[in-house]
Length: 277
Image 1 (cartoon, rainbow, N blue to C red):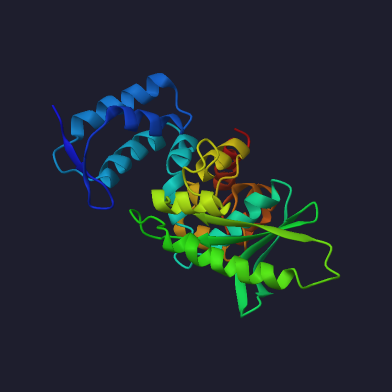
Image 2 (image 1 turned 45 degrees about the vertical axis):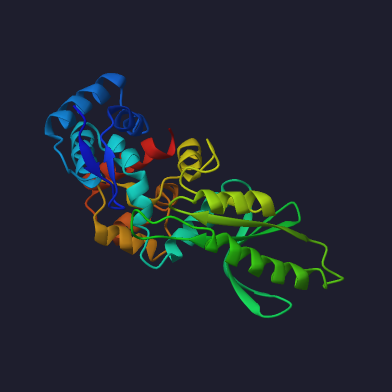
């Protein structure tokens, strides 16, 4: 029997066991546990249920079994929780690049031929400079349309034109990225490919989107933790601790938060499992 469910965008779609199964695979749960969860969720699905409610049920079942499974499963939601200002997302993108061999700076003022521009992230690798603009959405269901790469490309051209006038500058500025925590529309992707802009979203490029990079490198945001409270996460984000890896390195923050030693052990165990997939 076909059951219509409601996406975060308000659109009605048919409930798919395969989509639920694929999303659960990223949690690291065994095939047996995944099928158990699918069976339980299927019993509770009804006409008009929201994808959020389905997620919450699957999440609770995973958390009840093992917290690290739930942490990985909530990755997309955890990215949204970096908001609402978008600045923690810029720090998150910057830190991911640093683990990929880049030197980065956040919120850099760069001159253009026409006007000055505040660039979200400037990344350097082997004397090549890349400017990166981050488009963060704090609400699910919103995508990046063609207006975003159009606007950013025009800013990039202005900055690049000014850069070329620097006769003593040995570094090359020849790359621009647009990074979003949601998805790009087809038009946006077509424009990006045509202008040779690098677009990075939740699921694009295929097999190398944000989700894939985070899973592959174990660079999970601190907001995935199922054991830290919202207050504790905000405390860490306000001190530029955006990755679980950073908390593993700077464990003293747990003492600053006044977290009991027994709870610290549980938190660090979860983080170790996330950082070492």
